[in-house]
Image (cartoon, rainbow, N blue to C red; front, side):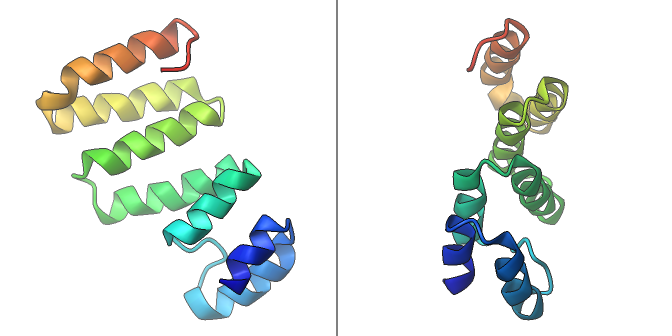
Length: 111
């Protein structure tokens, strides 16, 4: 919790020093830290964490949706679309929803 508090306070350096020995990384996958990185607008780290989650569970559509959203928020529309397309291939049940999101992204809107 102290590490997350440091992140919210903007002290990334001290947070990293505390998190590394405990988690073996300065970017733990725990939701507490993910929310802190989102709060800071640190989408590079958010993408790192969410990519790790997808690698650990590649057939989970929700994890892919979250990663696509992070790419979108980071301004990487192309990767957001590519990740959404993976969701549609993984589970055709989501095809209509994915098509809608892709259409909105290509139109420059926030889906």
